Image (cartoon, rainbow, N blue to C red; front, side, top):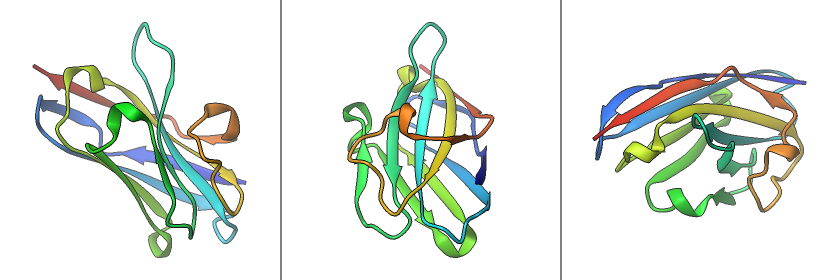
Length: 126
């Protein structure tokens, strides 16, 4: 199994940037897909981005394309979500999640992910 823990959330004004980190532990010698999700009050949980261990393929939700970038550092057993041009509607609890597998599915769907972090809060003010 893989354990993940997020960090890096905070408050920022609209147009600003934040970088979230996801530290992995456990069976990290195995290939696993990392995904980022978010959940805002009163809304359903949304998939944001996903990336496999070695594959260059990345997957993004349409609402973050061009603004958010997912990356991974296998040596540091970490993943990152660089968020630029933040909008008030990006305000949410952001979660890192993982599942064991060589590739991610070509989607960012919560049902695919087995291991979840506790989340980190991102607040964007107008």
